[in-house]
Each structure stands twice: as structure tokens, then as C-alpha cells.
Length: 164
Image: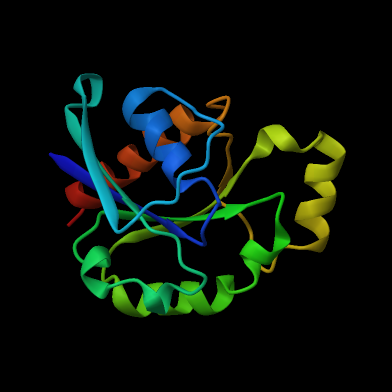
């Protein structure tokens, strides 16, 4: 089975870093904005799944992303940078747009760059600045919580397929 995961969100939130950490187990501090879309696969033999990961160019609003990118994806991860509150600005509108345009896709909100905040700052950010609850908080730099997140997402996708 192939599980297709689309990484979306504003520019500079770490979508490409998550992509590189999951596909290549690498991280770079250099920032390279994605032009268009990058797609790669990773075979997860223990789960008998092919993970097909889509990294699309960041947009301030999801309405600017071509709808075809959202089509038939198993999971859509809306990534925010927890160190830059302006990346939450359009989250409610974006989520409404995604829910109206992605069909049966599983949608999760992921906070990235956990490594840049102390525990106290993390708690403060969650209490003050977020208009929604994050499904997970990860660090592409250290890899913290990414394997756990993707394993759970794949299990959720497999369960969904089994029950349909």
C-alpha cells in the first residue's frame, strides 16, 4: 500500500526540512525555498507501506496552492513554525479551505522547530498564540517526535482503509 502525505503551510515553516529528515534522515541549516513541488518515496518494510511524501512551495494562503496537489492524498500535514506566530495567522481560513477541497484526506496540524523553544516558552506559546490545537510538535532539526508522528499517521491511514 502507498500512503501519500502532503506537507503544506506558509513559507519557511520547515516543510522541506521535515521532508529531508523523513526521506533522507538529514537536516541542513541552509534555507532553500521549494519551487513548485518535490516528491519522493520511502519504503517502510516493517509496516509494508510505501510512504510517498510531497513537499510543496510554501504559500501564505492555501488558496494559492494548485488544487491538484491536494487531490487523492492520504494525509495532509499543515505545518506551522512555533517560533513565528505569524505562520498561524491564516490557519483557520486555511483549514476551512483544506477541509472543503481534500475529500477524505486526514488533516493534521503540526508545529515544527520544537528545538528552538524551552519547555516554558512552548507552554506559553500554546496558551497564548494558537487559534487551534496542534496534533503534534516536532523538530526536523533533531528528528524529535517525527518517527512517532509518521508511524501513528500510517497506522491511522491503514486503519481508515481497513474500515472502508
